[in-house]
Image (cartoon, rainbow, N blue to C red):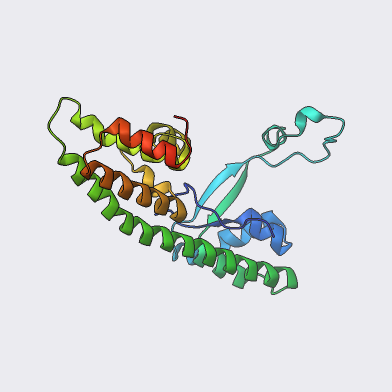
Length: 235
C-alpha cells in the first residue's frame, strides 16, 4: 500500500495526517459521500483538533496519455478544468473516528490496519527526532563554546556560520542558506527542525569532531581540509 500518512511541513513539531481522498480511495467509497459524512460528524471530529482542508481540482477523466504526451504530468492533468474539490486533512484520532463511522467492510478494515501502522511509524520517527534533537544540543553547545574561546577578531562572528556550513556541506552537500531554501523556511526558524533522526545524529557526530579540532587550535582552513579529506569531499 502506498504512503498514507504525511507531514506538512516535514518538521519535528508537525502533526501527522492522512486525507479524506485516501480514506475514500482505500476504503472503496465515493469521496463525495465521505465528504458528506465528514460534514455530518464535523463537530465530533473537531473534538480531536482543527479540521483543516485543501482545495484541489480533480483530474479530468478520459485523457489518452499515450496520444497526449504533453498531459502526462499530474500538474497538467489537474489543471484540465473541473470544480475544485475539498480534501480534508485528518489527524490520527480524526481518521480513526471517521473510519469507525464507515461500514466495516473488508477494504475499510484492511485500510485501517495499514493506516494505524503508518501513523505508528511516523510517530516513532518524530519521537526519535525529538530525542536525537535534545542530544544534538550538547554537541551544538560544545561547538559554540569552542568558537567563543577563540581569540577576538573582526571575523569571529562569522566563524559560527562558517563551521555550521562546513558541517551541513558534509552531511547534505548544501549550506544552511541552501537547506532553508529547500525546506521553504522563511525567517529565523531553525533548519534543524526539518532534519530526520539519522541526519541529526550525523550532524551531531561531525560537530563534536569540529569542537575537538578547534580546542586543539586548528584554524578553519585546516579543519576544513581535514574533514574534506576524511569524508572524501572536494570542496
